[in-house]
Image 1 (cartoon, rainbow, N blue to C red):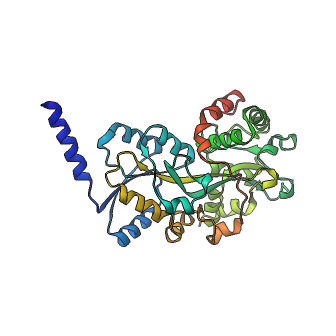
Image 2: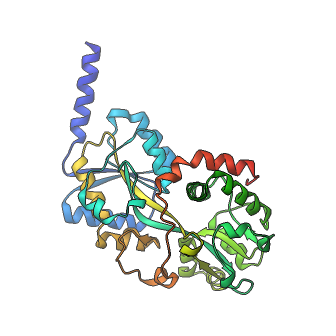
Image 3: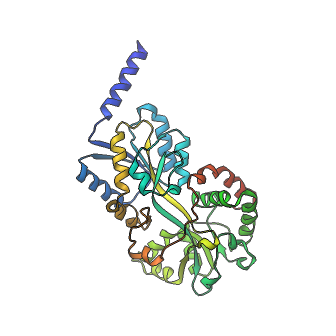
Length: 336
């Protein structure tokens, strides 16, 4: 009898959550532009959004603990490695959408359709305009060359962006070649890894190092800042994206998936499709200085000033699959 009552209670909870006019979003993105986007979606569809925010790991663990009683419909986070973690944790289900298959490039989607990329984050090479001739810049591999000895800044190996970069390179070049590269990279550090991407950019501007590896939008934020110090930093540096001749640029994503026990699956698909429309991309990606996933979309403002980039075309699923290898490799070469 007790088991029957528990089953009835669980079904009642799920039924109460299955409101066709609701959508429950678990998001690790904390941007005002995302909130504007949610309001627009509600205005256009009548579907009310309930938002839970937290870190990626917190949200994944919460969904695991909630199990079949989880009200989550859509999971939104940044970095393909984190989306892979959600997939491995069993909290996602396949997304069935002809529209998403058509508009989102294959390399920006999970190979099993468990999640899709919705914006592009390019890990570029920041350089000091006074000390570095951009003609001397090539690809990530070449940053391990002796000419960059004592001239490179980069954040810690415990950062998911660096782990995904290394995981991507393992996919392209193999573990042995990438370990050799990583050893050379560590030897070229101007200082021990510290701080975030913005700190690396500021270090380049200050002459502590001549080049750094950082995501493009951190520079975009400095360029748009109203703080005079930030503007001075931005004026002293520039960003370079490796061309296809040198392997192309490492592209990561911000993306979304449908929760495995979504009580409002149709609304979830509808919402993710909406995020991949040109209207929504103006806020979701460009509003946060991220490149849109729609390939023919015009990119205005600061992103337009950065220019186009050649993607390395590595499927982002590999960032998660190779993450354990990347972490062990970085540990072995002393990248702390």
